Image 1 (tube, one colour):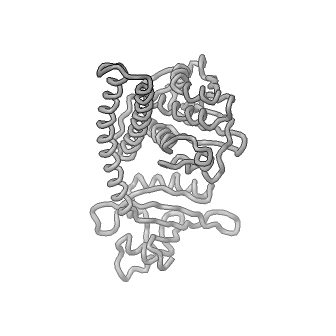
Image 2 (spheres, rainbow, N blue to C red):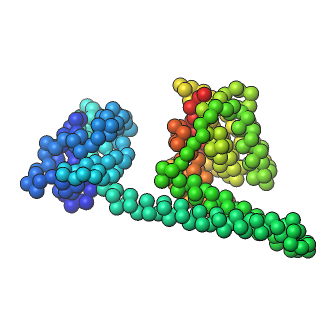
Length: 342
């Protein structure tokens, strides 16, 4: 604790320190002769962040054994706040009650700058690639329709393969663009009220080619339920398509994928259940990371960019909902997400 570059502190339940390591004193820009004892960490946070930690973070840490998030702190004498990752871990007495807190903070300023640079780069590259792919698609369409001369059967086969490749690359570039927009906070939504059953039917049609390849049948149990949500119709369609395509790719051949929904406490929970190989516990959260592909996906060589689930979660959270997965290895998976009820 004395030599780490991260802030390490022990505090009471009001965030006043009984220990603060040298890196912590440096991050908070305290005087050189400061012992680090009796420092109120709330003084370095905004009122909103203090409220979140006291009313949400500490209860979560007590019940779950830890709570982690990213906040901004303002060190002594510094005008601009700095981003930090904060982790709260409870200290318990012999009765098992939380009577103190271990606090860890990591300065994210350098990481934040690198991430912003990366996001800007991905955004610029995806824009340039889309422009080139649009031209390629136009030329392949001209060849396919015979506007520049008749093609032999062999030439038509080559052109069709080229069109398929351009289409796949275009979808990948579109996914990259959505990821960069979500991360940069430049993402807009068109919120509307619409029937969920109709949207599932539409997503089902979009996913039919993928499912037909493996004999997978999508069962829409939402149809006729008269469930309406308040969300972006186009983006919700994209979320469902991503989840259904995954179920079609990874579900057992000639199996069923069930789409169901239920309303509760102002939200509708939509679930997509397959009967595939399932997901190992250690991968349940990692599959939502950008470009991450599960062990089973890599072994079975199922095509994909590793962006579909990341995008789906980002689109759900942008609309005020949450997305999660429950899975048992060998018994399939259920992906569920919530949206505000209309």
